[in-house]
Every structure is written in structure tokens, then in C-alpha cells.
Length: 463
Image (cartoon, rainbow, N blue to C red; front, top):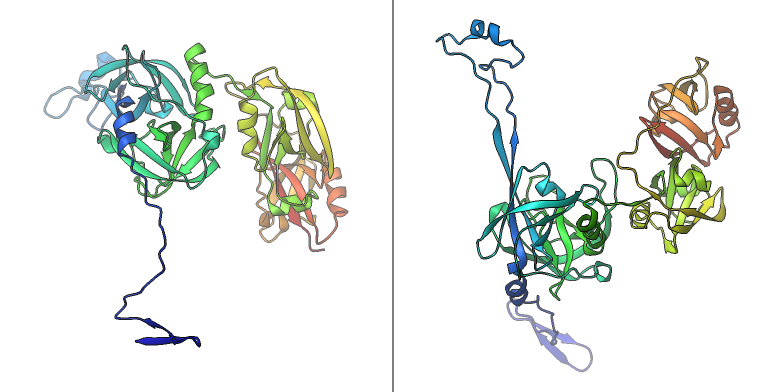
């Protein structure tokens, strides 16, 4: 095929799918071989065992049966029932050495509830480790083995990590020791709440192949520094699907320091329950764009209450650092030393305010606030399509009309409405008056408490 281009009679030959291009330089993937050779000796395999009780099967005698009656429950062949013996559970993970005298970092979930922890080194030595300290909120743990002049790795500055940067993981996926896998940083500051709905770790997301057994292993940058600790994957199959998450090294540094010094981690505490500001909520609160951490609830006796923070406040800056997403705030607060005085900038009813407060200490297990009923007065007809009654700190939703506004925004029986349109709701009468006067065709914020957890919803009335 011959193609004539332009007046200069420039011809381009396209012959059987062979194309000619101008020279272009393509960057090749880095060679990780030297990095692996230099640092893999500091990576360790961690195996744990713990004793768990077995359930009683159909041919076993429940232990609560008195000994004097047990002969009545013998098997047909005359053999007596015996309680099942306890069994051992084992698990595998990875870790890395950070000091020449044997301090090791891994994940908390790798060693949780372990009776025995065995560390296998690169030279195939197996040593029993002692647990120095563990922190479930960051999923980190520090172990100690006896040793001298052990190989170590250095924790780098994870704040300097860039999306698109090459990274390398070394660990023991499925028990295959010292497996290396490479990829790039896919995103930073991912919010992944734990089982207690806490998110004190702004995770690094990568596409590095991580599988069961990689947990606790190091994530290296090209300089051979550990910039993350591999912690979890997103998977529908139980195996790698392209989404891996690592704890940033800068988060780990402070946790490791405290675990080595005291065996536990102390974090700063503000004492609020927050939620994301979406587009509808931003408009309903008069913000130009969705940004900040919306306070849904201020805990009683907390530093936030003492400082005068209120539900409906939107924190936009904490100690000079911008709060873009709600998930930015827990890490910023938690990393602060207890007792430090900081300033926060917030938006309250459309106005910007600056408040100073003193950082408190995060309780080990914050309790939920109970809401007790204080009346039986009910309201059945309102523009929201909900049945409510008086209760402590608001009105209790007793029923929701299937086709009403309340059902459309997710209200359900048992929820407590405490605020509508920045106005506190403390009785059925107050609720009726507020709802009656709400403007139509405009987004309105509503604060709701359900099962002890507060959140804001945005709704719009058509008439």
C-alpha cells in the first residue's frame, strides 16, 4: 500500500502491517536484583502457634455433665465419651529486622493471641521471639530475638513517596520464603477503617502482588529503604487482585518507638465522631466544595466538648495542616503528643472560626453513649413521612413511611433525630415546628444517632 502525503510527494509505505515510527525512548523497568541481594537477609519468616479448644462433636460428652452420671452416656459399643483434646493453630507471616540486636517489626494480626512465635532467618536459623508490644489500631507489633550483628533495614520517609513510584515487596506468600514482587504506588492516604471503625492509618495503595504470608513484610523504595509495612489486600478470592495496602513508614516509626519504650501506644484524642462531607452535605452547610471533617457527635467529657466544638462543625484545618477528607483528621490528631495545645479551623453555620484546645489521651476502649426514653408523645403526620416520639436528646423514629422522604434518605426505626437544619431537636413539638417551616427544594442537613453512632444526612423537600 502506498500513501501520498502533502504537496511534497512524501510517501509512506505500509507493508503487511509493518509500521515505521520516529525514534522514541521508553523507560525500562528498574533492575531490583541488587536491592534484593542487599536487603533480603534482613527479612524474616514468622510462624506462630496457639492452642484452641475444640468444639464438642455429636459423639462427645458435654463437659458440664457431672462425672457420676457420665457412664449413662456411653457409646453403643460401651466406649465412654471423651472430651476432645485442644488443638494447635498455626499461622505464617513476614517481618524485618530494624536493629542489630534483634528487634523485629511485623503486623499485629500475624502474632495476635500466639502462644509461641518462631522467627526464621535468611541463614535458616530458627529462633523463638518474645513480644515486646503490639498495637491493634495500627496493626503493628515489635518482637525481639537474641542476636548480635544481625542484618538490618532502614525505615525511610514515606511522606516523600509519590504515586507512580516503583516499590518492591519481599516476604513469604503462602510460605514461599523470600519471594520478591514489584509494582508501583497506586495511591496514598487510603482510609480503611478497622473492626472498631477506627482509621488511624493513611494506607499506601500499591499494585504489588501481595498474598497471605506477606503480612508484616517490608515494602522498599528504589533506595532500599522500607517505606511501608505490607498489611492487607482487597480480594474476592482470597488471593491477589491488584490492590495491596501498606502501613506508611512514618506512621510505623512513632508506633515502634513507643512499643519499644513502654509496650503500648498512646495517641492524641479529640473526642468526636466524624463523617465525610459529600456534595449534598457541602451544599446544605453552605460550603463551596466538599471538604473537611463533619462533626456528627461530640463525646461527653472529651477535649472537643471542653473546647466548645459542636455537632455540625466542619473542621478544615488542624494544627496548620489542611483537612481535605474526613479520614485525614484521625491520623493528624492521633499523631499529636498528649497535652499539646493546637489550633483548629472550622466552619460553623457558614462562618469560619479558629479554636484552640489541648490534646487529650485516646481511651483504650471508648464507651458508647446511651439514649434513654423520656416520654410517649407521638407525631404521625409530617413532611418527612416518619413517626416520632420524645426521647433523650432528640426524637425517636418509631416508624417510617415506605414512600416518604425519611425512607428515601435511609431513616429507620430506632434512629434518634437530634438536629435539623442546624437547629437542635429536643422534643416532638420542636421537631414539628422545624419541619413545618423548612424551605422546599433546598438541601437540609439532619443529624441522626443510630445504635450509638451519629451521622448527618442531607434531604430535600419538594413542597
